[in-house]
Length: 384
Image (tube, rainbow, N blue to C red; front, side, top):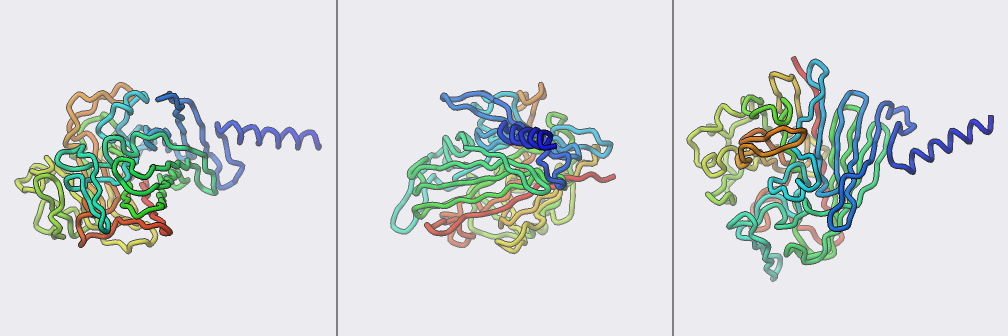
């Protein structure tokens, strides 16, 4: 009997040490697994691919380069799984990517006007990588970094915890920033993302997940028939360069009114300056949430043909809705698929664009001794 127990314990230890996953040994994790595989090498550093699965046929793949979700497979109403996020087949393609497919954007997601902001008496200059503005952390933001990674197992979920330390002055930002992002796949078919960060000097922080979704299946066509609801009655209008004017404007009476679900394509071509500036939808919506509380419903998307439904829950005050307006036609994607204009949409839970220069917006300033934190969950189901 003792020999059998010893063999069993040794087997469990071997699974834990190899990092290649089976069951976690917890009854609450039956059918859930993590596997780890080599994905490539860049600048002499190895990149790993983590695959998370639950018992319902949901599968998430994540690499520790850019903290990128490379694949997210979800069953449709008939039980057939398909990948619903845009991505690539190889590390080299992600290194060359300029569309931020599936990554964590930071230190500051979205735009900062003219690549400049002031904290106290100090002005900071950032890269102007989206002329005339700074976008998504600069020329080599968090999407171009190799993160440290470790597997996470808890009752009802498996995941990957990713950490990265951004040096003082990196991309022009002040302060050393210790950042942690944890992706978890739950038994309830949720992809939960928990973010935290701490600094040793006053700085600004705004992180988000920049996934491009197509609930009919990545590479299956445009996203214009998807039906979207956004729980927001106001948005932040921008000027032509996509920097907010500072106004908090009502969506009522505009093509940006998604308070009741409607097809994304219904008003995308409407004659409205905000749609002209962004070449389609690319706006920050002001959510009616209680800041810092538990994640609340921010948006719901359904795709009629597949029956797939995605709900976005977050603790953040805003969500950027973007319809892939600048994706070029004929872009080579994962699994031999081709991506075109408007074949993916983003729902990026975050603080508002250009907040460091907008005193009327919720602050994105982080000071030593305080912790930045947010949680965003993408929850999947089917209907019909």
